[in-house]
Amino acid sequence: MGFFIIKAAPQVDLYAEWSTSSDQWTFVGTRAELLEYLHEQPDSGNAEDRVQRADDRGSSYRTINPNADNDQMPGTWSSTGLTVQGIDGFGWLPRPRLADYLRALYNDDPDADRFLEELDDSDAE
Image 1 (spheres, one colour):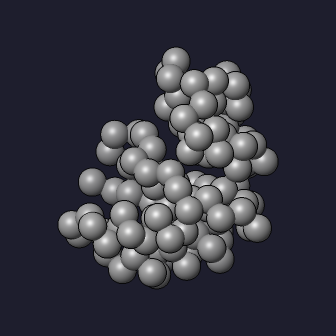
Image 2: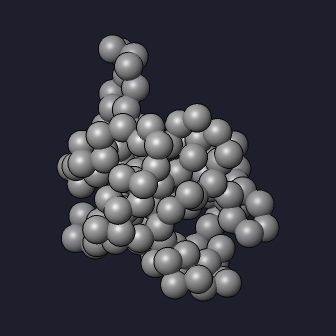
């Protein structure tokens, strides 16, 4: 089971953890809340390193493929967006809307999906 952390925006203290096996958010909160959550999880790896990667690149996602550009991985600052599961199914979340979307999730906003766009064939992440 894989998980990666995404930071909402460079100057925003808001993070989320995404599960690649269940295709859903497993956590949304501040940096302090995230570190506390990660320390409670079995096999969460080095929490501080993962959060620092998210701080530096927008995402803790990395690959072991030596030919891959880790700065183009899902959720990084240069990423165009993510395919995420909302309340009504999957949608496209443009990176510039990520902070607003995560803030809505954090505040239990029932209309958080308003930040998602319909998927089309070009939404590949």
